[in-house]
Length: 165
Length: 373
Image (cartoon, rainbow over all chains, first blue to last red):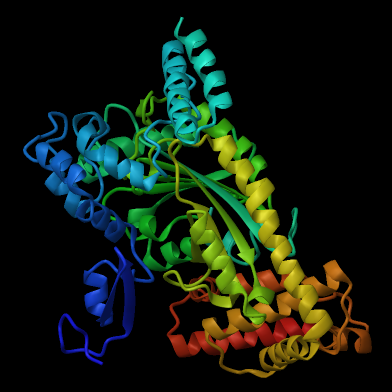
C-alpha cells in the first residue's frame, strides 16, 4: 500500500482514529508520518528538540514569540531569531527580556515548572533567598490546587502568608 | 603532570567498589554556572572568553580540595590528548572539540573536574564509584560554595541559576548514573528499562563509544528537568527510588538466568572467555561486548556466589596453576579503559592506525587474561 500523502513510498505506519463515532484510517510512510508529527524519530538531538518545541508550539506560544520578534536584548544584541537557530541564549539578561516568549518553552522542558526551587547563592542578599522560597511555594500551591490536594494547599497558603508578612 | 601519569590505571570511580557495585559503576553530578556580568559564550569574543577563562582558572586552581589538581588548555591540547580525556569521562566531547579559549582543571584522583568555557562558563563535575549520589552532591555543593565566595554567578530568584540553554535552567544540576545491565539485555527486557526511563523523563545514553549507542550493556541514566525541583530532592529520587529499583530489576534478571537459562549464560561467558583469550585482532566494539559478559560472570560469582561451568571457565586456570591473583572486576574495568582507542595510543606513545590498534588491543587482553587466570 502506498502512502496516502506522498503516494510514492510504501506506507509503513497505519493509524486508526475514532472521533465523534466516525472511524478514519490513515496509511503513511515514515517520512510523511514524521512531517505530520505522528511518528517521533528515535534519536533527537537537544538542538532538534528545542527547535521542534519552538516550531510545534501551540498558537498562544507562537503569538508570544511573535510579539517579541522585533525585541533586541540591550545587553547582548540578541534576538529570538538567533535563539531559534542556535538554541542557546546570548546573556543572562535574555531571560528577563524574552521572558514572555521563553516561558512556554521553559514549561515544556521542565514538566510545567517555571520557578526555581533549590540552592540560592551564599552571597545572595537575604531577601533573594526569601523571594526564591516564596516563588517556589506559590508554584507548589498552584500545582496542589490543580491536583485538588486542598490539605497541602492550605498548608502552603499559611506558609506563604507567614513569609510574606 | 603528564597524561601518562594516569593513563595506565583505572580511575578511583571505576574500580568496581561502592554501594550496588554489581550494577552501578559510578555516580556523577555536574553543575552548570555562568559568571554574572558576562555574556553567555555564544556572544563572547575570544578576548572575553579568555577573560572568563582566566578568572575561573585562578579561583578554581586556588581551591583547597585536599587533592592534587592540574590545569589543561583544552583548545591547545593535541587531538589525541583530548580524546583520552573524553574516554576517561574527565571532559565532555563538546568541551574537547568546541571553539575558542577553554580549559579544564582536573583532580589527580580524577574524581573532580572543572570544565571552563564548555557550553556554560563553568561546568563542575564530581564522580564516585558505585551509587554515591549524596556524597557527590555534598562535595560538589561545597566546591560551588567556595567558588561563590570569590565570584558572583548569574542567578535570578524566579529562574535560579541562569544557563545558556534553557534546558539546564534552575539548579543547573545533571545527575548521571552509569549502569551495567547485561542480564536485562540477555533476557530481552532492556526495552522495559528504556521505556520506564522515558516515562520518568530521564535520558539514557551509552557509556563508552561515540554517540548514544550503548556498547557492552553500559548505560548512563540522567535527569532532564532542572527547574522546580531542588537538588536534594532530585538526588534522593535517584538514590532512593529510581536506581535501587533498576538494580533490583537487573539482579532479578541475573537470578532468572542462573535458575532457568543457565545454558544461555554459560554459552555467553565461555564464548567471551575463549574469544578474548585467543583473538589476535579485536575491535573496540567487540572487546566491550565480550568483556561485559566476563564482568557479568565475575559479578555473579562475587555477589551471588554463582559457580556455573561458564563462570568456572573464567577461573579455570587459576585453580589449576595456583595463580596468585584471581581475575577481579578491577582488572576487567582496567581492560575496558586501557583498550579504548586513545588510551592505546597514549600508552604506546604514538599514533596507531585502526588495524594496529586492533592487534595491540587483542595482545593486551590476551596477556592480562593469561596472567590472571
